[in-house]
Every structure is written in C-alpha cells, then in structure tokens.
Image 1 (cartoon, rainbow, N blue to C red):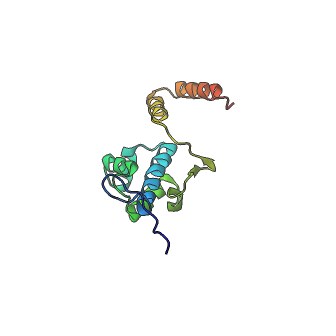
Image 2 (cartoon, rainbow, N blue to C red; image 1 turned 45 degrees about the horizontal axis):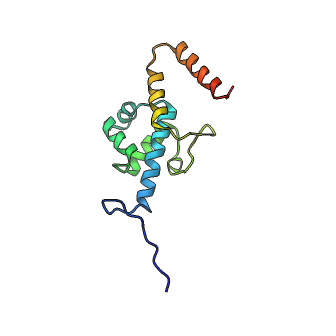
Image 3 (cartoon, rainbow, N blue to C red; image 1 turned 90 degrees about the vertical axis):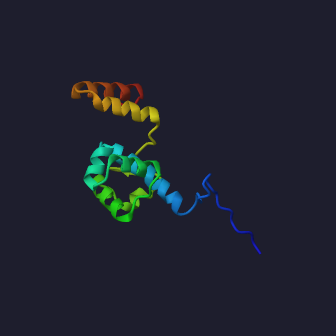
Length: 133
C-alpha cells in the first residue's frame, strides 16, 4: 500500500492545498488586476456593494470571494473568472508583474501627484532608467 500524501497545514490547522491555495491565487490576482486597471479598493468596493475593508480582506486572503461577487469583480476589472485563477495574469496580452510593497507605495504616491505632466515625466524617467525606451 502506498502512503497518503501529507498536506501542508498552517498555524491554525487549515490545509494549504486545494481550495485554500485557490483562494490565495484569487486574492493575489485580484489585487494585481485592480492595480493594473487603476481602480482603488474604495472604487471597487462601491461598484460591487461592499466596503473597501472587505476588498482588503479579499486581497489579503482573509475572506474568500463568493462566486457571485467574483463574477461582479471580474466584470468591473474586465477579466474572466478563469483569469483570476491563473498563475501569470495578463492584461492586454502583457503579464502583470508582481507588485512589491515598494513598487506599490511608489505607484500610489505617483498617482497622488496633481499634474499629469509631472506624472508622465516621472514615468518617462523611470522607463529610461530601466532601459525600456
């Protein structure tokens, strides 16, 4: 007889495979798609009828997204539910990079600048420094 495969457990005893792994993938991709589309947690929450705190909980994996709510979110973000379960989400054919905390804070600060001209100039500078032009 073969051995049963051991599942990975978290501190609270929950399994890290199966449905929980899917929830984590959806949580991570939800955040990536939302940021890539330029939608705030508040805007997304208002659009689907929940608070921004609930969107935070979805994105942090504290609460799973119900199927009906996932469908609403996908419609707003212009993606399919299947996209939410993918390991490398894409928008317009381009992979969405993993957002580090530093990159996220930088984007949020850039978005708060009042001048579109200044935002474009900073963006062009960063792209030039990164060798993307």
